[in-house]
Every structure is written in C-alpha cells, then in structure tokens.
Figure 1 (cartoon, rainbow, N blue to C red):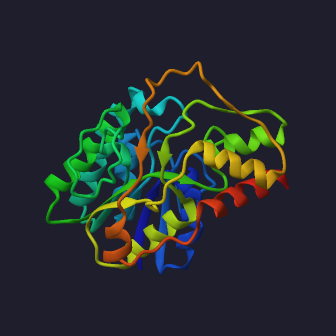
Figure 2: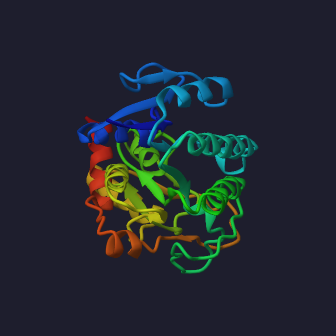
Amino acid sequence: MKKILITGSNGFIGSVLLSELKTLNFKIYTISRSNISSKLNLRGNFFDCQFVSKSLNEIKPNIIIHLAWETTPGLFYNSQNNQKWSKRTIEFIDEFYSLGGSKFIFMSTCEEYGSFENKNKPNELTICKPISNYGIQKHKVSSYLSKNYHEKKWIILRNYFVSGINEKNEKLITYMVNKLINKKPIILKRPNDIIDIIDVRDVTKIIKNLIKIDYSGILNIGTSFESSPIQLAKKLVKLYGSGEIIIDKNFDYAGTNKYIVSNNSKLINNLKLKTKYTVDDILETILEKHYV
C-alpha cells in the first residue's frame, strides 16, 4: 500500500484534509507535536532534523503533503520565522527525493505574485515579484522545487483566502461572526479590498483529486469570484438579523484597494477540478457553527 505523509495535520486545512483522505487506499502518516492527528502520527518537531530524518527513513512515503508553516495571524506576513521555514522545507524536499519519494505537494500562497494594486488575475505563468517576507520565502521554496526537481513529480498550490469551519478566530469571516454574536460592532480597516475566498472543503477535495491524477506543476487555488469585506459584513448582518459595521477611517492605507483574485482556468478548465461551495455557503456554515 502506498504511503502519504502530511505535515501541519493539526492545522486548519490539515484537520479537514485528514477526513477527506480517509477514503483513499493509502496509509496516511502525520508529523505533529501532538498525538491526536491520526493513528499513524509521528510525534515530534518538524525542526528536529534527526527526528524527521528517522521518520522519513522508516516510512519512505510515496507522497508528502507539506502544509506546515508559520501562520500566526497578524504576524506571519513579515515574521523572521519564514526564513527558518523555507530553509527547513528545502532540506525536507531534498531528503524526501533522496529516499525515492515520488510526489511533493507544497502548500504555498498567492503572495508569491506580489503586488495586488491592479485588477489583474495572475495565472500560473505570471512572473512572481513577492513583497511580504511570507511570499518571498514561500517563493524561495517553490523556485527551488521547480528548478532542482523538474524531472520529478511535484505540485505547488498557490492558495488564496481559504475559509471555513474551524478557522482561527482572527480570520476575517470568523472575526465578523464573533463580533455579531457578542453584540459588538464589526470594525473594518480595508472594507473595499477585493478578495478571492475558497472553502476549505473545496481545497481539501482538490488535494485529494490531485493525488489520484498524474499532474505536476503550479496551480492557483481559488474560485476567481470577487468579494469585499464590506459585502461580506453586510451579508452576515442580514443573515444574523442585526449588527453594526464601522469603517476605521483612522487606518491609513493610502487610499488604495487591493485586488487579490485568482485566475483559476487551469484548475477548472484544464484539470476539471471544480469548486462546490459559494461564499454564501461559507458565511452560513460559519455563522451556524458559532451561533448554535
């Protein structure tokens, strides 16, 4: 039986992915600092090189799904920890392929593309000019993987705004839902940014399907639909039945609105991996979970 190793399995995407992959005829292993990820969890720290090396040699996974990274809300974009993650991930990639691994799936980010001031939907061939430290270090790993292992199978997932149940309280939709439930105003600093939101259930379904097909390359993970924080807040207030929205006019962003929307034609048209859940589905799911 083939084997999959997942890092970051206790995270937001990882916890949903584990459930999604149960139907596959694979042995699913996880690396985690806790012991609750799966029956085949290897408990330890990803930055413990000796532990990880021993784990890889014992398992010899056919596929790795690397989700683990620095994700502390409000801090990860410019955290110096991103350098540590990129360096360690590159070492991880090298060791995986040296042991005969067949496919490395790397969860990256749309931040690889860089500036989002113009209404452009970048595709997978768009030249990357990352600005944030997070985007720079993710792109460093992507570039290394694609340049050094072009004859191997690998997938780079450039995800947009993944949302859904069990996301962190600081994430946009859950933040707004918690404000409504606690009878506090929703305060928006960037109300008119245009963003691309995709349900975590769609993301994990896409990963599952990518495991089953013979594909290698970069892939944008988004819906290509436009949403803005102010639109989302108004929809939530309507669904909930009450609530106050305040625009923080003291927050200076030089009057520019970001446009962070994917070109997902490769995902939808080429690979036929369609998304199921709409933004309204996400809002209703999160509101119902927290309200009930």
